[in-house]
Image (cartoon, rainbow, N blue to C red; front, side):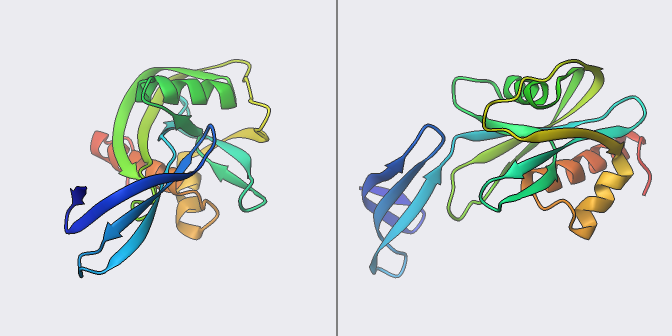
Length: 186
């Protein structure tokens, strides 16, 4: 038996598992004292990068998103597990998806992707001093890279053209960091 706040977990069972995620069903006693179940998705961690070049352009990838069946603009990101450091994972994903490497990295912190149903946490970074090379896409990735002015990417966050939560939080945190440094007005 395990306590989580006012919840009691009586038993847990993995109901589904593949190389990218597992779904755990917890038999619980709810805070109101009634029995119930609670499903939790464990998808490891996410690392994402807001990569900004010397002309204040940001790197976006237009990626096919299987669950929605559409191509969506987003910042480079991907999953990693406990055996990899967050910045190393962010650097790896940036290179794989775009061919870009960076010599300047700053952490923008973490956030929960969907705390009500998932344990996945995203680690956000801003990368600068970029070099461009050949990308190394995985067989599952359909990605086109583009550079756009950072301010245009922010506008895309606010007008709904960017829907990806990791990209929204990453770009907005990057804007705040850049404002604090005096590199961005407004």
